[in-house]
Every structure is written in structure tokens, then in C-alpha cells.
Length: 128
Image 1 (cartoon, one colour):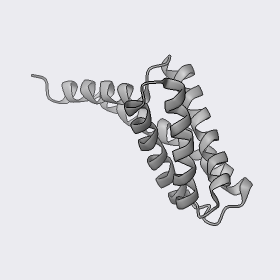
Image 2 (cartoon, rainbow, N blue to C red):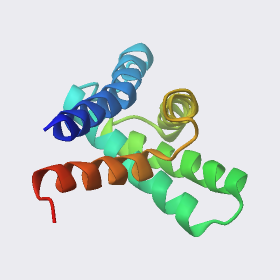
Image 3 (cartoon, rainbow, N blue to C red):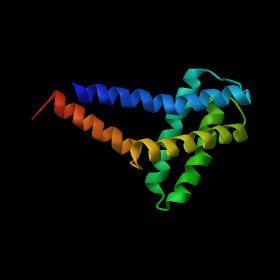
Image 4 (cartoon, one colour):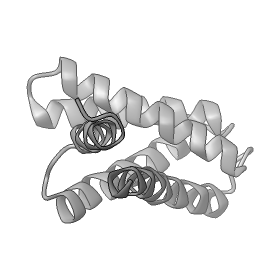
């Protein structure tokens, strides 16, 4: 049961670390749609695009650059703003996620940590 609580706390903390900067950035830049649900959708889209970029591009710096460029599109579409404002918000979010990954997860990618926590929760709930 402890692993399940840890999984839930990890998921909630991950969303808060990613959504709060987007919401604040959207309010600061006065975008067209600064709603929290739009920020959540934009974060989900950006993290998916980041995962794809880092998975398909071998060079890590080029992968982060591609993720940043793609995040501008995601944020501009979801937050109803121009590309440049979306790019600023997307770059800020990716910096926050990269910093939180280094500081809180010791460089372990969040997807791997999530997979590890899911496996632990499954093992605790359904031992073999």
C-alpha cells in the first residue's frame, strides 16, 4: 500500500511541478486562454513531445532543442497565443522539468521513475 501512495504522490507532484509554472507564465504573458486545464493539456502535450524528441534524436542537446521548438507549438495552440509566447513558456517549463529531474530524481528521467514506481505498486498489490 505504501508503494501505491508513493506512486500517487509522485504523479501529483510531477503535475504540480510542471503545471504551476505554465499557469503563472500564462497569466504573466497574458495569453488568450490562461485556464488551468489548458495549462495541463499543454504540459501533457509538451512532455509527450519531449519524450518523443529525446527517444528519436540521438544527440541529447539536439533532442532538447527539438523538444523546446515543439513545445512552442503545443503551448501556442493550447493557450491561444502566438508561437513566440508559447516558446517562452515551453522553454521555461522544460528548464523547470530538467532542473527538477536533476535535483529531485538525480538525473533519472521522469518516465523511468514513473515506470519503476508503477512496477513497485503492481508488485505490492499483486505479488506473484
